[in-house]
Image (cartoon, rainbow, N blue to C red; front, side):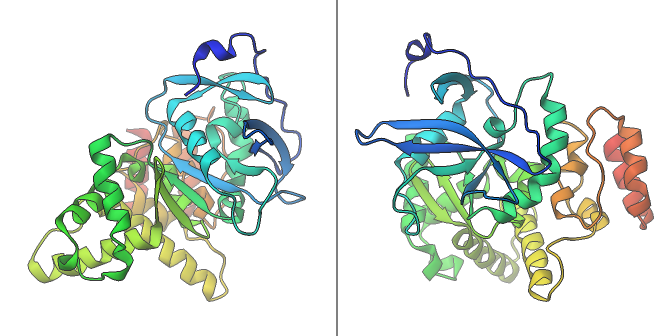
Length: 332
């Protein structure tokens, strides 16, 4: 990681306003002839001439920061994002793009986090989340950097080629432990990660320099469920609980699309299935974090009271149990 002193003489980065309804910012990573990595933040029209990009899903967690240089200007970014950018810069370009810059959508960089402007930009960007995550080439689920011991266990699980073994009992003890570590990561408890994973064309799970395909992890999860059902073990209260809920919604949504229906679900069903146990920075997020998957449309406004948000959701709730559940979550 570059020391803070390297950025002392750089002017501060300033965000340009988003002026179009479907305008987004993308992190541009390029490498010059000497191998030096350059970062910049570029504006693009999501529904226009937008380059291919990868969206990132992660948990904010530790808010400590370190400066990075964007277009020759200094911006403080979360430590986990600095680590992520370091890994992204090392990744080879995809086969369809041998040269040129690569683009990524990372919310903490691509949305202005200024306290004065953040709510206004969130109200602009949250309705675009469905388009962002469904149009991305794929989604990276970033688990962060692991400890050396943990990294070794996880890397072993990834290299053990779990996609070839469908029986939980056939996996080595160390592989099982690696899978349990991955599934126990706090990212899967984050309310926003649900739509980010469900909408994705494909998902790559990354921690440090190691990666695994989402489908491989899910195969291991389903093999454990078969094992648990046959041997009287608990499954729904296991480390797989959150992953299972996300994958269940993902299968339902994509099955609907394969039958010619929109890739969306009823808001009431989503709220019942995902309410109550997921991490949310603000109570509003328990609704807003699911809107990218919902058939219904609700205006995003963090300045409105939770009681007013409930009144906006109430017409879509037919089940009395859902009404009580949402009321208790938003207005308790």
